[in-house]
Structures are given as C-alpha cells and as structure tokens.
Length: 246
Image (cartoon, rainbow, N blue to C red; front, side, top):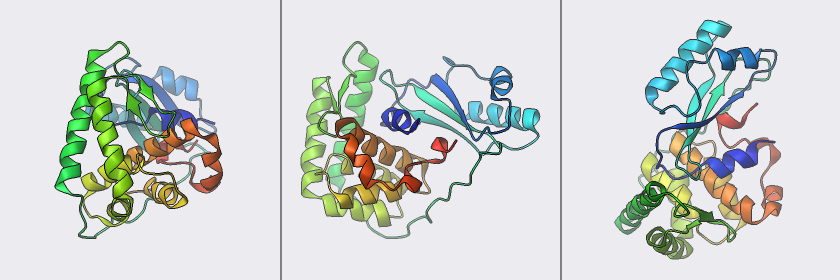
C-alpha cells in the first residue's frame, strides 16, 4: 500500500521545484507503461503549473479521456515533489471533497508569523543540503537537524499544546484556506488524541490542496512514530487525497 509513502512525502510548502518521482493511479485496464513512456515530463525535470497542463494534454491524447487529477506533492528530503497523475481507468474512483468552510475564524498573528519564520528556516535547511534537512519524526512530529528550524518547530509545538482547540476550530470552520493549512500542520505538533486525528482525517478531504497535503503530512508523522495510529483512521478515508486512490 502506497499510503505510507504519500504521507511521508507530504511536507511543508518549500521545494526545489523538481519532479523526484512520477506515480500513476486509477489505471485499471490501461497500459500504464505505454502511457509513462509517452509522458511529456520526466523525473528530474523542473515542476511548474505548465507541467500539469502538458500532462493533462498528453493523457487526453493517449486515452481519449481527461486525467482525473495531476498534482505535485511536496516534499522529499531534498525538497522535491512526487507528481501524481490520475488516469481514467477502470479502477478510478471519484474522491468527494468537503464543502468550503465559511466561518469567520482565524489564527492569531503570533502563530501566522511564527509559522512563516519556521517555513523560511526549513527552506534554508533544504537549500543548505547535507544532513541539515534530515527530520526526526520519532516523537510524532518533525524536528529538523538544522538548529534554527528545530528551534522554531519546538515553538510551534509549545503553541499547539496550548491552543489545540483553537487550531481544530480554524481547521474545520475557517473560510481562509491559508489559515486552515497552517492549522493542519500545527495541529500535528499538538498532543496526540482521537479528536486530533479525527480533525485531520476530515481535513484530508478539504477543498484546498495545501490543507489536504498538510493534514496528510501530520498523520504521516504520527504513523512514523506509532503505526498503531492506523487503527484510529477509518479504512474508507485512509486515502487522504485524490492522489492516493489507485
């Protein structure tokens, strides 16, 4: 099952914008090898919105039908992406997303600013190379080897422990997608609980891609530390985003 791989790869929104790996799903009854060989993009190439347009055009040309999804999931340890391409095969399934929340609830400026600093430090770690971007997920949340990033991640951890209910509220109800995405990532640093897991599982079907990615990331970090967490995630929703359906 490729769920664990996806969850491990989902990460903060910093990347070198290269394609580390190309994965297809929904290809039942189709010659995926021929489709891969005819793909207009290759692993190692830069990633951009143009890549998605080229892939969609190629899938339409080869299969006669539209791609169900084309998404670049960030990030691996080098800050690169996995490109997931949904094909209209017999195994393709419609992935229902949640309605967009409409609530007027937002994160504190303190957390928004802290999260921005953490993202910059994590990006710096990726650019630094070597072991700087190595992550320890043994506690159920990521801590980078790069000291400036690790310090800020621990600050997010302290904030999340004190404001878990507020994070869940923003994640589930805020009309602001950026704040929902931050909440999903920050919630992964809070104390593990059934309520926490349930909120992240629901957010895996958020209408916004970044919210889904960050929710998958948080669940993946927990799974890295404790595989028994899978028992608390209903099998029907383990497919945390359209990219996982096969």
